[in-house]
Length: 484
Image 1 (cartoon, helix red, strand yellow):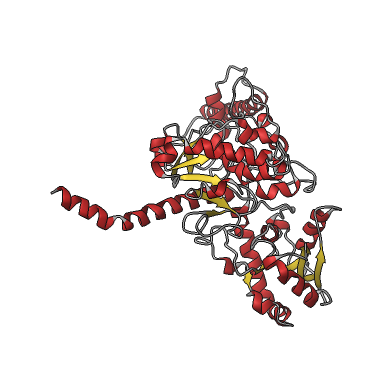
Image 2: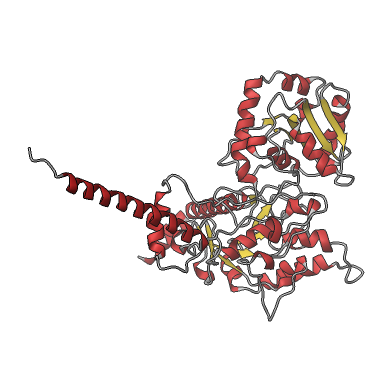
């Protein structure tokens, strides 16, 4: 066996040590340069090879988006500048229209119908705010206005679908050719118009809200898009139950986005053609990791709100007299004034079950406040329609009680006291899983309320087309035979 000379071995080891030391200095200097700037002799590509590629593949860049959480829900306005979700630093690609579920054409209505109602002033005939810049997005008013802010979120989402700087799901995209659209979107903030201008009288008999509705009806009836479909492919937002009071009977062929059908006739609004959208919760949203457990919720049953209501809401009075003296039950009158929302936030997060009782209409934002608080909802509203019920099984996270049973003495308390701890925990865990489907955010995220609404519209459009095809099958066959 040939022996390596000692001198050669020393030289080899010296070169090896020198190489290792040189590589160590290269890595350290590259790391410093990578952090403090690009002005160097080492190309960025070398930084990426040396430094970035040492990061394990399973560690993803931080793309966390912070959902809006009002610090003072009663008075705070919704400000995208301060509290909307973050726009990703890396520029995303614009949505591919061919891959979207829905191609949407939106009318360029004057700002008086949408962001102008928020006090936004257009610049040089500008119709829409720059949604790529959070500083230029108008704030939405806080308090109970928030619960019907659906129109705001959907419009922002459509505008952002053609912005190269906003990352969002490509479920619905805005297109410029109405003949290629699946649906026509009408950007009228009808709930905000009602809240702000239903009492603003322009004449003795006419309010600003009614004038806007009249203008809208005239505009739509004069459009080729409306005439081609009779309005059936139009989406009109009327989430506040008193919004569109004048226009709804003229535009009833369209697809309404509603809170429920409580103040509509079945000829104008029904489940076959219309969309039920969730309210925007007004209480503080709990983080799933900090959600109080079974033992940390001392109140068994919680309700706070208006007790004396008309129509279907009479049941609230009956339940109040049945439950007000029960142990570990909180059933009191409450309103948004005097810190009512903050009290509700604390109360719901301290309770195991939260009552959602029919009021003047079958639905209320109380259900969605309960979901945000991970308080198992107890729904006592026989006529209620629920958002996304075709894809969400509410029985996994809510309890339904018929009104006729709820008012029987002892029935409700006996039912809730019999629910075992492990069953409650199952529902609580499911609440934490599905709460994202009821969150309105900007930019929208996959599976949030905005995305879920667009998916619902897609399913509704598909159903209407399928139903129309079945209805016309014999007519089309006869036309074919007549042509032979």
